[in-house]
Image (tube, rainbow, N blue to C red; front, side):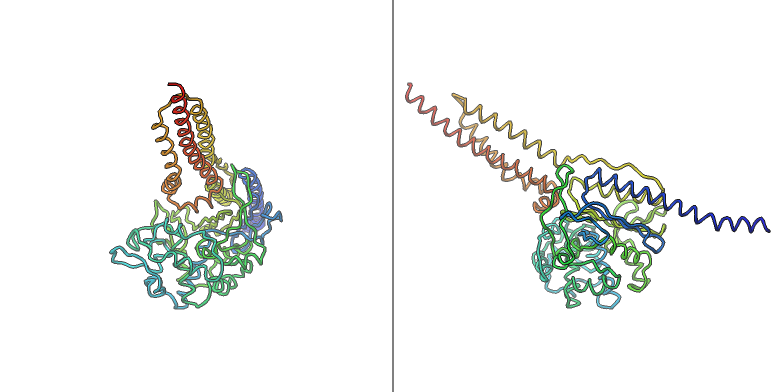
Amino acid sequence: MKRYLFTFVCFILIFPLHTNADSQKQIELIEKYMETALDKYQIPGASLAIVREGQLWFQKSWGIQGNGDPVTEDTLFTIGSVSKPLTSLAIMKLVEKGMIELDQEIDYYLPSFQYNVKGFDKKITIRNLLTHTSGISSYEGLKIADQNLRGEKAISEAVKKLNHVKLTYEPGSVHQYSAANYLLLGRIIEKITGETFSDFMDTEIYTSLGMNRTVSSFEEASKLGYQPGYHSFFGKPIKSKMIFDDSGVPYGYIASSANDMAKYLLFLLDSKDLLSDELFKEYISPQVHRKDEMYYGLGWRISTDNEDPYIFHGGETPDSRAELYMNHKNDYGFILLTNKNDMSETMSTLSMREGIKTIMERGQMPELIKMNYQMQWIPLLLTILFAFCGSLSLYRLKKKTSFHYMSWNIAGFFLLLCSFVFIPIITYIFGAPWHSIYHYSFITAIFILSFVGILAIYGFLILVWAYKKKQEIKLTNSCCP
């Protein structure tokens, strides 16, 4: 009996020491991993908060903001599509108040908004908007996104731009990730409550969770010292212009800090007070199957793998990236905020998210994915190559004593035509409007514009020089019969 008692006492005393040692090792690995990642990906500033077992377990910030000030746990970042789960939470709050029904058609709440159903039997419901199954395409969402609209009427103005949109699928049948869905949810919140989206989120969500440095408008973000982030020039950060779309806050422009988002994570770990158990369960439950064991929920991406279940969402604005991850099985979650973004570096924060997850769950530090910047190299090399070839061709044309005038004319007109259709072709290939490409891959867009400019200049010069050469040859032939 004494031996068993001795063993039990030793276990009680030694187990916490072992746990603390493991935690300290994880913290050291996370710090080393973050420092390595931020250096490798040349990210100017970042903030990471990890909650575990109902409390803030780790928090640290690195680097600088756009104005050179150090990043802290209270520094504001735009959180991109991580805004969607917060907008979804606001909808669920209205459901609890009896002001919204998830399966009610949106015509009931927003009768002024018209959409072309194309003969489909079903109409869009609130749940359809939350799960991106409204039938509104991703492209239509991008068309009205990132417009840099400001002011209290920004959301209603953007909805007017979306009015009469054509559905591509019957509501409820196909998942199409689209900013338009959450724009409409934002407007519905305004119509039902009689408040601006910003005011409602502040009083019903942020204040309730103690998130006193989270805002939903450019004006409020500016008061709290919000600074724009950075674009990327082959990995090197370059300061961004101020892009903050007030109409986009329901789907991507909520501004928050790591400290505030940690409070949201703690709510996700233990849903006390804000929602009933039943509604909270639905809030984080899978709704639409995507592939394998991955689903989309009410503003969430969800893994239903029995061995590795979790909910998460990534987010980006033109100059920031965010990753939110929550694992209820292992009782922890984290938010990663960074102030640099480019389409060519999408995998950087995804790699960091998986790295932090691996350290937390396996105690191992994985390798970081290497960036190749092909989206910037390809248009740059094409521009340089075409500029060289064009200059050489024009030089040869200038030196020619005889040439086929019609062939050079056709070549000139063809190049001018190419300069007009090149950008529409690029938008078709990417499945995104030009302003989205310009905002989210700024340097690539500059190189593409340079290439288009060279095409146009080259085509125009060929036509002018070919005409002049024809006149010179005519004059020479007339003088020397």
